Length: 295
Image (cartoon, rainbow, N blue to C red; front, side, top):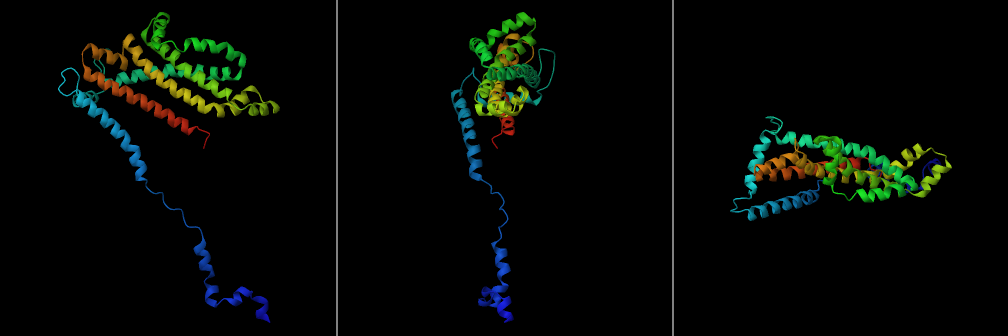
């Protein structure tokens, strides 16, 4: 009778070995530890191989077209010139004879100042244009009129106003890099769902809280896209502006090497300009991913 009360039918029907093995079966059914991430060789191969093939194709075509040429340098001759330039990139023999490193840094400094001023003006202006329809209707014709103007057309205005080459170059960067930030920020504000703004109106939020709590997170991807476009424009403009204004900078350095008929250094400068522009864009892409609200 005691056995019938205190033993379940399952235990009664199983042999002692089966009952004893129940804990080990439960342990085996426990979830296993996550496996270590596997190395994806195929993804790495696809990420590395296409760019290498593209660069190899460019160098191969370049070598083929310049074979036997006496005017246009070959890839090997350009590489040797680059090795000499970057062996001492920060030498200084006076204001008009400085290494390529100094010229790159001076150009980046001008870009940083002009681009920073454009961001300080363009992003708030984009918010205002997107937020207030009356202001949008007033400013949009001016943007449509001024945005297509060539960057170099603004340079004489800067020289006339500032009477100096350096602020004129910064002015040119400012006026040409402001438009992408204004337009993209305004479009982002205008695409914020009206339901969000209705909720803010019901909660009686101040305009500052509407901008910081609702508009800014929604507009951030558009704003960062405008910033990426603007920094590319700024780096493009500074090279052309420095060719005309002189002084120190990568654009002036290219023009000076042309006057010396040093085509090898011009080709090196072209690659340097492209690499610096690529690094600037990748930096902003990383910033955009860091501050993205999508994940």
